[in-house]
Image 1 (spheres, rainbow over the protein chains, first blue to last red):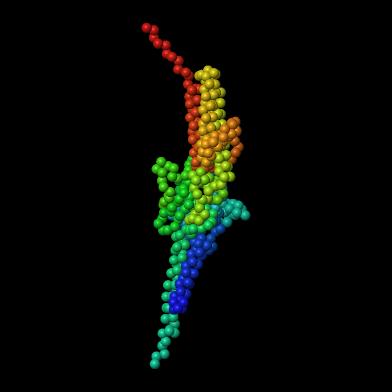
Image 2: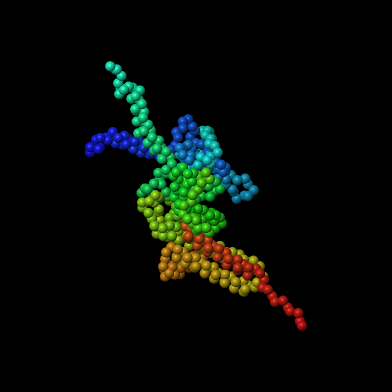
Amino acid sequence: MRWVIENRRRIRNLGISLLVFVAALFVTQWWDLTIPSVGRAQYQAVFLANGQTYFGRYYDRIGAYAKIEDVYYLQEVNGTDPDAASATRIVRRGFELHEPVARMLIPKSTILFVEDLTDSSPIAQFMQRDSR
Amino acid sequence: MSLYDPERDRVRIAGRWLRWSLVWFAVPALLGVFISANVDLRSLPVFGPERISAVLFPDGQAYFGHLDDSGESGTLVLRDVYYFKNSQGGVTGVPVGLVRRGTEAHEPADGMRINRDRILAVERVGGGSAVAQAIEVERQLIHASPTNVSLNRTTVAGPAALTAQRIAAEHDIARAWTAAVEQLRKLNDLVLPVSKAEAQAITEKALGDLRTVRRNALAALASQVGMSAADADAYVRATDPLLEGQSFANEPGVLLAPDLDAIVTRATQLYAQVGDAAAKQLTQPKATPTPSPRP
């Protein structure tokens, strides 16, 4: 008891430090390590090094990964006629065999560039309609 | 007598606060942010549902398993790994089959270390997805024990999921049987270099062999799902006649657990071998003995 009284200031400081540490840990996780961005469009196109493009709400994050939520991608559909040109449709990610959840993490090293989609973009309009 | 009191000096007070804030506030806050950014808290001991991750590669390959993405090493570790193989044109009705990592020729140990710079994306596999169900059934087949408290709880399928997969495998075996029989029938419709009676004998023999393959596949299925020898025998005798003549053509495809998929694949290969052997006999004229020159 005497030791506690003598070291109460140090114990208080340690308690504050511990609280700050735990708060920082959980706030960062809760925020999903996302760096806030202001004035950007609702949807982005994320172009990857392998030629694949994903559309969705892109978030830059602290750490090795960026995040895309509500992901869509383009898929070529070949008709029964082999001579006809293949059609392209936009597909919402989540209906594959592994039914992925809406959050996709992408290593920043595989991203070539990210573009905002304008409000008049047909892809953005489709995603907006689809998300309702 | 000096009026200066160092205890009330504003600069000194500010300095003291600054030092205190740096040591007891800023350092722990930065430490918290750093650890949070580098440790995957979702892989720490929890009592939650299992979390299976999908690691996608630029070439289209996908690996599924328990992901540990902690640390700054640039490497992520995937355990209890499964991946897709191409099954286009197969009888399962699904263009891919699931394979358990570790069954390859080099028999790799569990724990795949993947270069983070070489992956395309990381996703969480849906709990009720076909992939998750096939993995859970596979764990039941290899007698993996469920864990309640672990880094990432392992879920093992119950009897209902196992039965559903067994039935799907039975139907796949029946579909492959129907395709093999159909091929034989088409061959018999051609103008063959053998007589009708010979063609019928060859076809009957092939059908018998195909039935043997089907029965053996069902026996392997029974053994795989853990039936005793007597139960397996009864199961084969009861199920085999039910599959005769059934095509299950309009059934949706089911992604099978790797061990069940292997039985279906093996049965399909054997059906093809039997069919090919019959086709060879049906389409090749019998060699007539060449007349020997008279002495």
